[in-house]
Length: 162
Image (tube, rainbow, N blue to C red; front, top):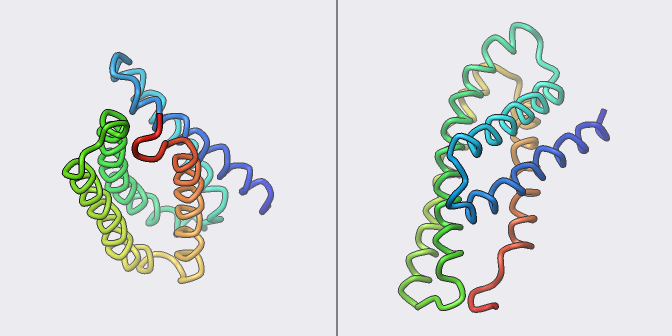
């Protein structure tokens, strides 16, 4: 079970990793094509969560609406990250101190908003699930985000690199 979840997390994460740079670099890509890819990745992620969570029918009936609300909030934050990456891609070779300060402030705001969003949803999930299952769910989310962040860190050059 753990091995298949690990492979699924990796597959979903790699899909996101491929998508983010494509979005950042693809100004000419039709929006509908990118949205199709994003929807496919969201569906894959939902399938992974369903497999890993092992919810009872009663839990599932209550979990999925809260999950969907949470994902909508995460998507808003991810969209902000994509915009930040796009801005960085435009400026990283010749960035000014002012641009760096602006990007850093937005990065910190996004990170803070992720934390705020998590804190907002933990009690909502706790109303539905045991603390163990809530922790498991946030572990899944954290694993996916960590893999995506790792891949992005590997692919995004440092300021001023050619």
